[in-house]
Length: 505
Image 1 (cartoon, rainbow, N blue to C red):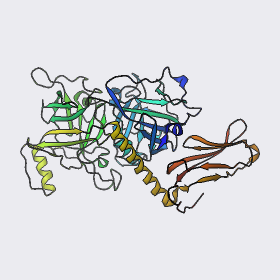
Image 2 (tube, rainbow, N blue to C red; image 1 turned 180 degrees about the horizontal axis):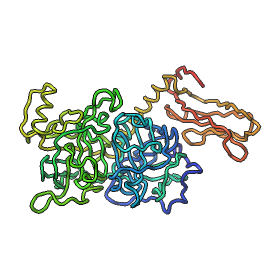
Image 3 (cartoon, one colour; image 1 turned 90 degrees about the vertical axis):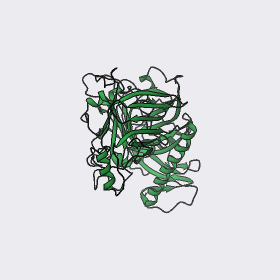
């Protein structure tokens, strides 16, 4: 955990400056509360951190392995998200809409943030979702954890860029990530009056009823087409049965697959499975139009039949903005079979187009050796949402940070990271000392030591830092301040215990 004074870095000269913005962000009394905020430094090995006290203290939960250097054309539903906001959250990636309206684009420009398993171009064979490609940001955070689960933002949360003085400023209309160290901050704010429970009757004209904190219940919309089966949806093998896999401004995906990370998705036996909930108008614009694994929602005519398709629920609260997400303990999704008691969703993998019908579910049970039969199939779904507070999220942030610290410690002990402790003496190797005027040490982007005379030796006191991994850079500069040479390095500070032996420089 680092204090704000210790943590806030400066933007690189080529990054965005306060002059690019018109005014500082001012939170409004809009019936929302800040649960936590995420800070991502867009550079190689930039820090990914979370704060649950409005930026006073930060917890390191990951690092950027490849920075984002641009934006790419996204997917259709991104147009329902406000510009400069989180357009999608999933256990296998986050998407931020960065462009405004452009009639020449099929879809808005988005920047993607990917977990470890979905960071390579060839990772997860058969992946069918939006790929950010070479301009996407890649991280060392495993799928289904941290910012891709319990610390994920909500669709519609606004994204800001941090100025040189630490102010949070809206993304400009022409924002383009540079990968030079700009710090992006996502304020994870949720309505005080949030959905606690959602029930969906799985039949034509079935009611979609939400119960909010405080006890009020309300019919939000109706079912236009019930879901009959399941399909292979990306990331569901990292999600868990009865858990939300994806939430964005046009889709909610629910997993029917247990967590199985032994191989990348698409390799070996099929381990994916799930179904989607979507507004009927949005679904009509996609390749999955009316597919059996889609549960479609929309308005009804006065006679109780589905109304003419039109944009209605897309990008609106509470179903497709600001309420449904992955954060905290997420949501538990269960079901009714033949109108009976609520029970866990059945585990179903692959493409089973009739898995939720009576015949299909009986076949699923028979295949798993379960002695049971039904006559109607799955008749309703229930979502029960966690209701985290800032105090809850503080504990989540600490736990996530500690998990990451342990992962990096294990990596360091495999002799891939140098251990340091106490006061570290740095003697840089200089190929042309006559040109060197300064030596500078930066730790996670912040200058910690500077020397402008020979001998160019620096001392770094690590005893004031919490044990953990840090990214250091030792730079040689000429009289004009130009960098002549740079030596970037990951190190692991360990002062609480004797420093274990390591190899290499």
